[in-house]
Image: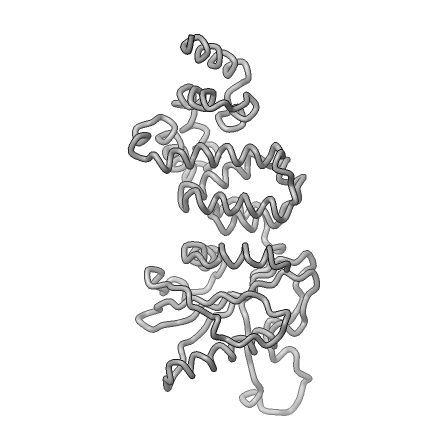
Length: 320
């Protein structure tokens, strides 16, 4: 993984909200239900010595579980080839972390840790998830053989239809990672719908970060129609978010809220469309006054070009 991509992933997964979504949506283990996400905090891991030049960014969170602290250790792995000895690497990183923690705290016991591997390579992940699977078979008693296991999240193994159903920031990121530039262009409306859900739940800044990721992985030009559509959506949504009081009673805000609420029960895409339709004329007026093109307004509002032209004429007439 290049340093550029490394920094983006490190930044996005340093957000406690993103980590909570990751655990709730993609770690199907009972212990997740016992985690106190209000207590989660990111730890500074700069004190851990680097073992090798190729070491990737590690992100560690401390969180309470039934009153006891635990660590969530994220390993980011985006190399093109599968590392068969990943369990050995991760075990070494984790024990180095424990060694430094013990030095700092001088405690008699150490907090438990849950190691997660997030893999974004193209090849299928085939490396053993258990360290013991790397060892030759022997007659040595199992209790004396070192054991370590990590929890694998291989992005390329997750079905897109499942990601669309989850509808949060992490699933949207994984959706993008699993899409080619052609896929993004073809499924533009679906992606905009996903970003609408992220905007509603996590805010405009995370949406902007996701758009940055699209630029990175797809190498799309800034004049791309797809990206421009998403930017326009974000721009409008950011305006609503930064002027909440002023726009609190606006038809667009009510439309998006009603649409998403209805969509939770009947399909979010249909819900958003129904919500926006109620006040779409006023919304289109605002977009026309902001100088947006008909094609972009049509993408955001769903109005026909004829309807948009009619509204544009009314706006022009009112200004004269």
